[in-house]
Length: 260
Length: 252
Image 1: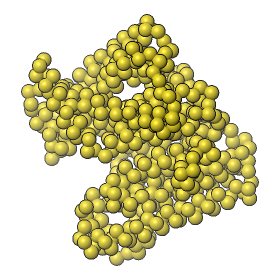
Image 2 (image 1 turned 60 degrees about the vertical axis):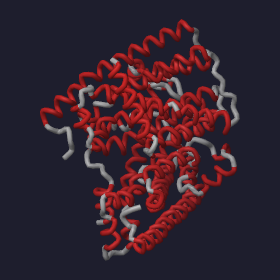
Image 3 (image 1 turned 180 degrees about the vertical axis):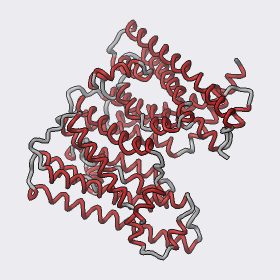
Image 4 (image 1 turned 135 degrees about the vertical axis):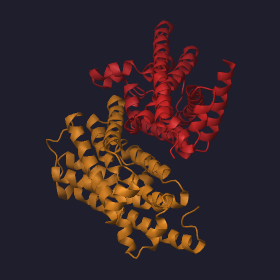
């Protein structure tokens, strides 16, 4: 257990260093949520339902999800391109632990989006960004991070197993923005799409942070949302495990760990 | 030849799934996302956002054209391109042609979806005018890509620049935010974007405006697109001369 935690920590720190010099990923964390926040502020601020805190949180979630989506889809493929996949697989630590650590690092960096979006709302537009219920907001935020991380864990092995899935996954930015209700409620979507929202941890995460920031739900209701969020997150990680096993079996059987 | 090989070679859509994901799904989903935000709480009617974002799908050729020069360098083919005994202008502008034509299919599909799924009203539309606006918007985006490509050669990251340009278009072209809402400095940037007037012309044509009433913005965007394209050509010529004299054509 201690060994696994050390690996998680080392992988997370190494990933943070890697991401700190990756221009595309930095774009996802800094520039994209900045533009999404400004555009949405301009679009909604003359409307009747405008809440700047809602926009700041929604835009933050878009930046977090984009970073996690792209980096999880590249988490294993990147090792292969750098020639380190064989070493990772050959090490006594399971690959899933290493990838979990990398995605913890990614999740931590994605949190920077919140600072960027807060700056847009509070400083650029001069709105008062207030959290109605800070006591429930903090756990909501933490559980939402867990939910995003768990979803990224499920995505990580898929693109390497089926290349076409990896290509399709890269356009899953906007579908999750919409299905998870980051910047508008899923009531805007057709009802047949609602079950897809309900199985997504990001949907429950977004619901929890939006409700606790606006004070729109009591602790009892939020408790129910947190439980569903954590259960769906656990299900995503459990679902990911056999895919990681499949990667190893296929790579060993086909001899396709390295590209050369 | 340049147009076809540039399209097939330097932009790496080697599988149908990648093509469909990048060319069809992504722009249409982006259109849906921003339209629904507007529909949720925007101050304009829902059709305002649907039409603006459908027009914005015309940005699609900008990205592959902008990354083209960088790809030539990364793949090691830039020196051959520079040394080839061919007309430099046809080589430069030619690489945009198929991407631009391909972009027209994306914007056309976006409008089909806007009508079928989002109920965009076309009963009063001047269809020919609307089609012209779609063509000019796509041309403007392609021209912007031609300028961004050589600029990215200096700044070393075409992808970053193209994404930045895309978000500038989303914010400043009038697709999502009425131009009257923008403060002065942002309005000035909006004025030099080569899709701003096409989008406002498309709104007029969709409402049934005649050619005479709404064609002049399209002419302005045509001229602006030409300026963007020529700027790219000049930047590339300067870069080429400097890079050859310093021996840095392939490197940084």
